[in-house]
Image 1: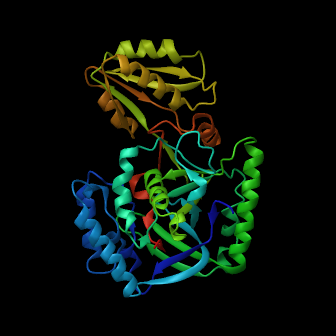
Image 2 (image 1 turned 180 degrees about the vertical axis):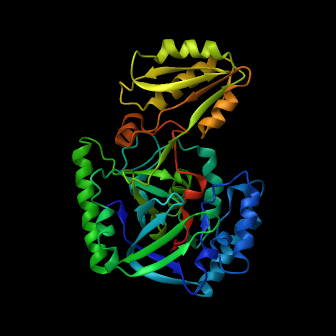
Image 3 (image 1 turned 45 degrees about the horizontal axis):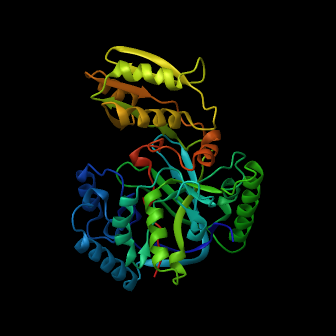
Length: 401
């Protein structure tokens, strides 16, 4: 069976979608006021905020909060908040605040074909190092839950745009399931039902995509990569391994997107190293990985700046070459590394004493999957898929018990 399949999808019915859909739980973790506003907007209406545990609240003993989540799931099921759409996909379009439209398809992944360990050779792979201690708290949330709500974004490498876009061309003939504005500056979301013969036709397109991947990367079995929600999918895998007899637990609901979609923006995450000898680090970096030409890495020390060039001659992304150097250097020298999203913020931090900032080049989409194949996973903090407000919102659900 193909790793991405049809699913029995639940959608809320007869309620306010604007109050129901909330952003991924791992966003705004240090801004509890964001989540206070979410709860204020949701009010007493059924809402997915009552079915998740934001990371801003994931500290200490969460037993009572988790039990309340599970009880609310049972309550929503008893009160028939959801309508079931069996054996289907949902084609979605997310209009971002920039006006760009990001396309995706909601379906289920087979967790037997997913492995987050580097070098696993699985069809579905993690894009970043999975931190083992981050998995148990998420497993605690999922373990006794009767429902799952997905924020995982799965990526396909469809340069010719033949897979997801096969649904774009026929969306006007598909039943429109929802069309509404997302809360707190999330843009707009529309979704169409893909069922029956349309679902079968898309399944055939999935198989054809798998064959193209086998030709594109001969000798490797990669088909998809987890772009967002790596630890959530790893937690789903862990719960399935605990309860392998449950067929529903074998699958996890995700949204599939194409890395080559024009609206799919991969922003580099830059490095700031503080409490270090900045010129000592710079000289060591030039000696260890500097080339006469290649990918530019801009550096900032105080009011000084310059460029070091690195070349991915081993199939490793430039960020991987830089991160490997930093890990090695800081193992023997003073310094603390932090990860910064904006260039302006990095320059400001690099102006401090004993600091050096490194602006990394963007991740090249054509090299993305090759980087996963070469390195097992991408280096930690390689990229961010858009801004916080552009992450996936919880909407669809699926029974896992």
